Image (cartoon, rainbow, N blue to C red):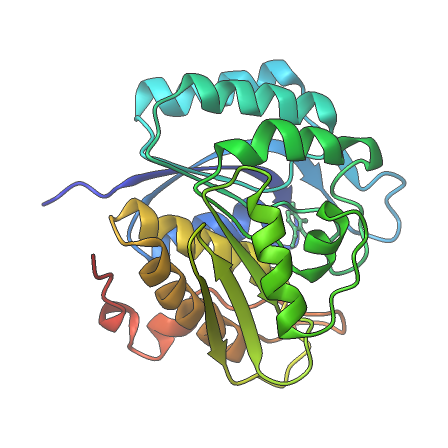
Length: 275
Ligand code: PXL
């Protein structure tokens, strides 16, 4: 048996199971890569909790990273919620010293239930330390807007311009996700030479918790398996769209995307990652 590609997510734990580390590991498993994790923070969203974000120490983050690198080895890294300046600087240093083939940065800032996932004073470190290390960054519209100093983004044309301008921050490619546009779900890729759009029909559901994490985790898995950036996105978009189609809610809050959607449809092995 060929050993699966090794993928490490550096992100927050989302207690509800739809986003963050949990979304990443479920997605990695569905896409047949070996998933590992460095937990940067524990996120709880219960209304009774006084504090929702519990940061891990730099020492704990470094120790988890060393475990993954030394005991397994890491081919590809996905970065999600880092929250603080100190964590961003430490994680950037760890990545710089490692020799991974791809780094996918999801510049997570604010959760769907409006929880703050990046400190207000941390955006500059994200821009300066982390984005230059990325093969691809995957902001949604509010994140792209904040990274561009609060620019208003309304139409696909705005997303195209945003992708070109965000590219100047040093990531090799930029995917701006147009989930909040009206009409079809359109994302825009700029890779330093051309703009490509990816479009699927919009699915009418509010149960999309974790969709962003799942999408970039699927891109990470595909890149790790050797696919090109464009093909990784195309295949990941199919994966996340099917996960959204199978979204549901156990209670009365916004429910999760279901990471096993594609497998439930018997399609998992039809998503061939082409080189
Ligand atoms: O969906 C963004 C996100 C990322 N990471 C963690 C989260 C969330 C959203 O809630 O909790 C840990």
